[in-house]
Each structure stands twice: as C-alpha cells, then as structure tokens.
Image (tube, rainbow, N blue to C red; front, side, top):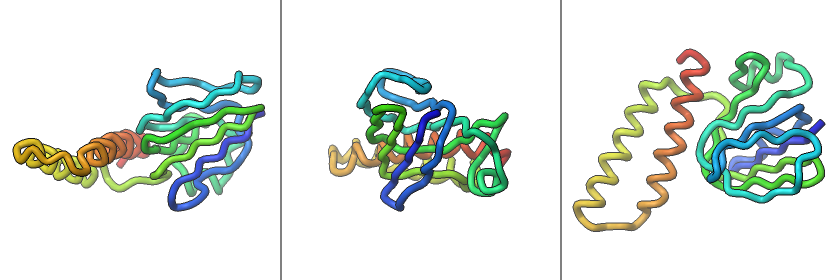
Length: 148
C-alpha cells in the first residue's frame, strides 16, 4: 500500500493510503505502485488518478470517482516518491469543478490575454497564464468526468 499526500497552497487536498496513483509528468503519465523506486519529477497540469483501498461516502462527496478511481486535477509542480510515500506539491488542486462551459469561457479569456500580450510583446506573467490554461484544461476534463 502507498500513502498519497497532495498539498496545494490551499492546504492538504488528500492524505490517505492508496493502492496505486497515476500522475501526469513531463515524461508522460506514470503509475506508481508499492515498491516503486525513489523519484523526484515535475508534475504537469492534469488529472491525478488514484485507487484508494475502498470508496466511502466521504470520497464520493468530496471527489469525482469513476470506476473506483478518484480524480483530482492539479497544476504543474513537483512529485516525490520515497519508500511508498507519494507526495505531490502543487499550487492548485481541484476535487470538484465548475461546469465545463464556464471553464471554457475562462480559458478563452486567458487565451485572448495571451494574444494581447504577444501583440504588445509583453512577456510579464506569460508562463503563469500558460500554466493557468493547462490547469483549466485539466479542470475541463475533470468536469466532463463528473458529467457537468
């Protein structure tokens, strides 16, 4: 059994045992199982999927669960695996999302802002906005999993 901790700027998002966890990274998705070699890598904005030992009402009420897999969207940050402890530190983690339509509107606003910055040759906060767009894409996928 693994122990998964997901920490965001808003606090601990998840801190429980899991059977396995799949994480989006720079090298692609990786699945961590018990006994995995130690690892430190960059997590990409996307959906973290994990399988808890059991699904209870707490999980069902707080997270989006599909086929006994719990889904949380994260922004880019860092992952560490050490002795069956998986730690994900991220600036943003979302367990439930707004409607996909609202998220799409927010994404379009950010894309327009990027285009404006490009035309003005202004690179301030460019990377931050790109990261925000990637996080919104993950939230949209999460929203669609929940049927919104």
